[in-house]
Image 1: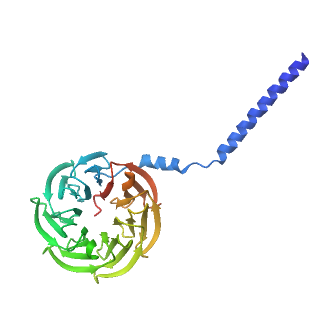
Image 2: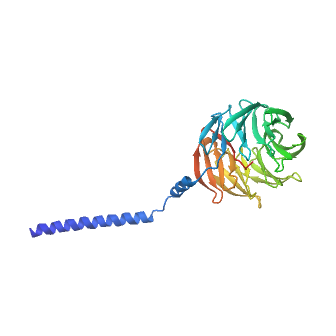
Length: 340
């Protein structure tokens, strides 16, 4: 009997020891395993509030997508470019398939009207005074100027083969137009609505943006995969900065310290330091990034990742992705109030 009790005691002690060892090993393993970065990212995602009235075009869905409300707004065939006024009242978007510009009320997403423009319209910009909408017609080689007062084209300006997009000077006095087929940027006087100058550029100037003081123009060149930095006073190219494979979207940050450049031919967003005029970082976001805009306060960067049907949201301080927003098919270009 005593031997039996001794045997039971030994078995019990052995089991207890093994359990203690297993718990110790498990505790050590747990303590040595680093917390996954996705945990922090997931926590950050739940805390991010998307600013109101941010839109992207959805090319394959023939529509616009309201990021905050998470709703799709039906429009025309092959919706490509979009712009919005600072007061959010007017949204203008181009249907490259229907050769029309759609004008929406940005407050309630209701359609105000559709305006027939030139063939294969792409870039669209609302003038700072909110009197006009400029539309770049690639096949027609022209800029259609729409009066917002009566929703009619009041003038067609020939600028050269394959114009693509437009940006206004901050004071609204000039409009700069990329002309891909002519490897140049055309300047239009917005008072006379006449072409007043040209700037020779690299191959295939695609999209462009300007600093808040109007002194520097940044032009992303799809044919040469670089960004031309142009002095708007001398009209001279100061530097060409290599970036990832185009076509490119481009956005100057509100504080004029950085330029963000997408490249639909790769998977990266390029970050350019403006004071140094140098590429300082490339952020991998997924295949086919194109539309790119910061929030009005510059804290968030939104990137249309066209091939992945999502929008990557980047913290501009850490330059890391902190949120992914799933969209419809082929998000292409973004509009953010207060960032033109």
